[in-house]
Image (tube, rainbow, N blue to C red; front, side):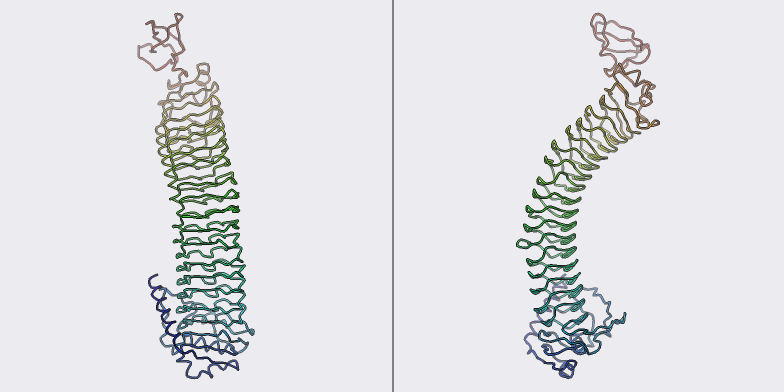
Length: 614
């Protein structure tokens, strides 16, 4: 960039120097005679104005005077070092300033350029119409003024002119075609004249020195990537005729710091329109804006503030991903919000979704690490997959009574989260919705949840207390995998189904079942508690003991003497005198933690010992 700036400064100095030279004006009455009119002066003139009639032979003369060297410069040449000029020391021409504003282009004069590789030829084919490649690779031109008669500027009309600092497009122009002005790496400013209604694809891409751009009020149509890669662009003046900023228009314009659309009639900002504008800090949107396309401002890593106005209805996926927004306040008119919309805005501390949305889309606030508290508004019924994935600073979540569905990984990897209370209105929890929440300690699941899905609390190592409500019917495989602190759990009476391997990597030590009908595996051969029979105690209602000891899911605990009644086996045992038991022993006198099958010795509070057969 420093090389570019130094080169541009030199070019500006050159323009001023040549502007001081006396301008020579040549009028060509008969097309094709410019070289004859100039004679030997064509090699010494630095500042030239040409009027009259110019055909292809005259354009060839002007290209030569402007430094085009076909024998030395291949058509596919690319400048590896921005700001340098391809060697053409053998050129005997020194023309720097050219003005053909009053010239008339006429058909004829043969071919002015033959492509060195493809063999394609170029000439003026119609009066008053500029040909393609008219001033392509004119390495000596510093200032150029085009004919006022031009209505259309074709592809590569003025391109790859590494010294060109000043360009005037004339006053009759209506259309600029694709690639018309590409790779003019020293051009610092451009005013597209009033009257221009259409701009083609990538007309000025990679004009790295361009700092200021003015678009006319007459402009209504732009194609994609029109000014992409103009790294030095700092200021854009928008006209009032444009309704849409298309795909990638200003992508990679790394010098842009502010975008001001107030006063414009823009309705749509297209996908990637301002993506990767790494110095962009502030965006002021107009009140008529309706749609912001996908990735429109993605990877604008310094973007701190955006003013959203009522009337905006749609923000598409990743529109502001990887920006630096600190606060988001969306209008009530917004009804569509795309996934990843504010992904990885690591300085974001608060957001207001407005009242028009009923969902938070997938990965919307993923990796927004500065969020500490989230209040889900009452208009939100669904929280999408990964909506708050990786929000490492999130400590508190407050769900409204409208939320019904929380989808896969919605709050996964929220490492600061300590407590979750799922209200009764929530009906669906997605796979791994709260997985890898390293500091999550307490969870309460409301009565609306029917199923705990796979990996729901996977690797929540600090989780020590889980309250499940009546209404829960199913716990899927691996729901508590890696919950190394969760030693006890109570299963509600409504539970009917357990996934295969539900206890995988879960060191549960005590399970209390409230149901009188044992919950069974999803499939006939499933083993939900495989590997836990000998180190986990299960407590069931006394009236259901026989059902559990014969259940294919729970029989293993019985076989390992780890199946007990829900009251620890002795609390409900009483004598006729009304005394209560204090301890249970086997026939050898060894104290046990509850009544086992066979003969049990129960010591009563009054000192008596009773034999109980189970």
